[in-house]
Amino acid sequence: MNEQFLHHLKQYADVLVRVGLNLQPGKRVLIMAPVTDDPIIRRLIHFASRKAYEAGASFVDALWNDPYMTRIHLEDAGDEHLGNYSSWRFDALVDNIENDGGILSIGARDPNLLKGIAPEDIVAFQRPQNARQQEIAHKRFSEGLGTSSIAIVSFQAWADTVLPDVPEDERVIQLWDIIFKTCRIDTDDPVAEWQSHKGALIARCDTLNKRQFSALKFTAPGTDLTVGLPQNHIWVGGGVNSNAGVFYMPNIPTEEVFTMPHRDRVNGTVRASKPLAYSGSMIEDFSVTFKDGCVVDISAKSGGDLLRELVKTDDGAQRLGEVALVPNSSPISQTGLLFNNTLFDENAANHVALGRAYPMTVAGGTEMSPETLNAVGGNTSEIHVDFMIGSGEMDVDGITAQGDAVPVMRDGEWAFDV
Picture: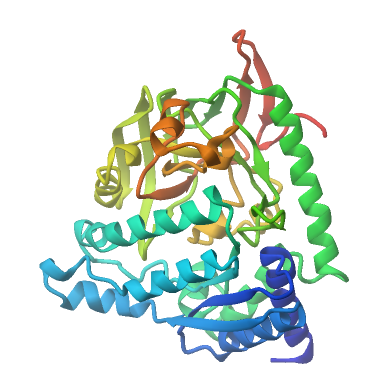
């Protein structure tokens, strides 16, 4: 690691703490850290810990996790034990959130980690954990407790899938360089760059919120989809506020603005523009058809059985909980790379999510019971699974209450100024 690389790694840690978490003095920080063979990741965790203390943290701890243990469990545990998990990990998250702390999640998942594992076994393993994660998401977003941010790191297994044409011993560092570029780290003042970017996303949301379209219509090769929007829906981008008024960014990077689809008013077919990497398994070349909000057909070149199992999770799993707009000119899209990682790929393209809706994307949603949220058009579910639908060939129209079509995107780019 040369000096410039270490400088960028420290800047990345600084952005994660000061922008992602927007850590306030006196708060505790829990870092969800992956165990890999790469010492760079451990170095980043240490840098982030020091940056947190510089920002006034009262205590910083790391909760380490080895992703490969999941594969071992699914291969060697009996069917009756597939749903077992360590509840204390989730308890640690809840404790941190209830104390208004910060949670920094660092991802390092091999897209092919669970290749060959039966789809029903993957779902059986994930389902009870998804239920716990839903409780945590409720505390974080509905109750507005604490701040949290998710980021990603380069490591060999992921770099091998993203950069197969690069010499093997150069892939990890080259992928780090891509992360630094797309996350605005290779600039004179990354924090200032993020503040400017945040403002642009908020301005885009303000314009869409004033329009209050009744629906969005997506058109592209293989896609003809109309997504109804609830009354008083709210577009969100650039970050969210905690109940203490702390504005933070749940995802680094982020290029999207998103809102709540109406659970009963989604009709047509949408074709995924990128593969979906779900829990170490790949779903490729697929399309989904909706009628009156529900999935009625799934077609896929590979991984279709896993997607069909996912939508059986509960009633809300077969409905949409998020619709998001991302210009094709986003820095991540402009790399021309397929990342096989939802955090990066969803910030390269328009996308939708099956399952749970974010309550803050409709007026008064954070104070609503699940039943009331569903009644206004929201969606509750144990899952929230994003998949990408956008490209440079996609047009998006906003449909007014009078039925008029207003251009929102043309050929993957914004059709209006802010």
